Length: 521
Image (cartoon, rainbow, N blue to C red):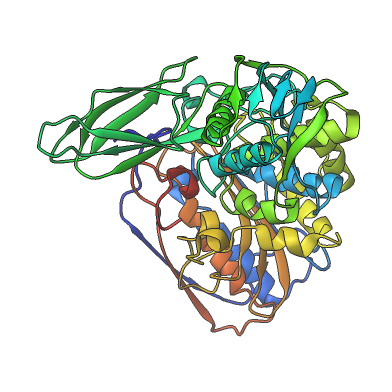
């Protein structure tokens, strides 16, 4: 089956074994004139790791600092600008918490205009959103039930979807056109819907299952059930699963081809999530006996409209978990526009990015360019040196623990604990120790965050790698993080560290594991 963004080459060999022997008198970092033996040995060992042949034509910036003192323990290209991929979310998420607050909630409202006469509403019914990415079909059903419970059975006017809390720019600057069908590049709207509790806003799950006999047409269903998308099914039942699910550009026609032997799911971004949400709500109204005579349209809610029903999302402090653990791009962009709306009254990327950039500058990140909130843009740029300074600055924030706990945790298999690091560094000193944000694009990988050394010293680190042409060097990130977890300032001269961790392999090793939706993630 085809998956997006295949790397140009695969890593040969699944297992990386590195033995590092500490020896006093090794190389000295530039920041320490007379370092403790453990610091000098750390520099030597990280230099050895970064001499990997895959990095000969690539660029890798690596910085390690003491989180308590800011002392620089290791630095390679500390001031060079790198594409950070989803490490951008470190900036977006913290700025959102600082600007909106941990208790911030998105509101989805149903309002009415016109007169009520018994069970008849002589006017329009409005569905107004403020960007809630957690709205499921069940939540629209619950809103429809509240409308019915209010006594409304007939609406003589239209159902109007109001997404004016944000602007109507659906896709981020510089996003690749061939990513558009995939849910991790879903369209951004103030009124949207998610198919599951990962809260993949603006997408639908297309499930393809084998028919009853070989050669029979495949069976196709969607979650949620919706007629907003049109399925064109050419897939058949076969001996293997090799399915392509593709949404035709600019439409909601989803074409399915290939063969299927076992159930296969694909998360597909819809075209115009506002219309998608409105269709789910209209269907739910009919289910609860509320008939709308007019068509479904889009527009602004009149100021004099009266509230009929409302649904508030989970607080931002809770939303941080699916957002950061699973590297949810849509959450990042929705929060970016929400910040813009709060600070300047404009739910736009420009307004929201100005807030994030201002927060970043106040907290150590001044050499930076942001084009979006998620890191999908390849024109985003940051330096590893400033990113580590930023991570240190975050530790003084009153909300730091909530934010820190929302970062992926290395080697923890729980979906909403390990997140994008759930399958990495298992069985090493870094497991359940490293809290860090991953980042992945083709030829871009990043890992930045926090680790506690073997001495109990808190460290921060940033590893940003761009332009590699071989298989992904994520296992080098893991090796560095594991080495930091074993770091001692005054290690005995004969101490030996053996680092042994699984190297990512396979055609999709360049992707965030959560984007591929495997059970292990």
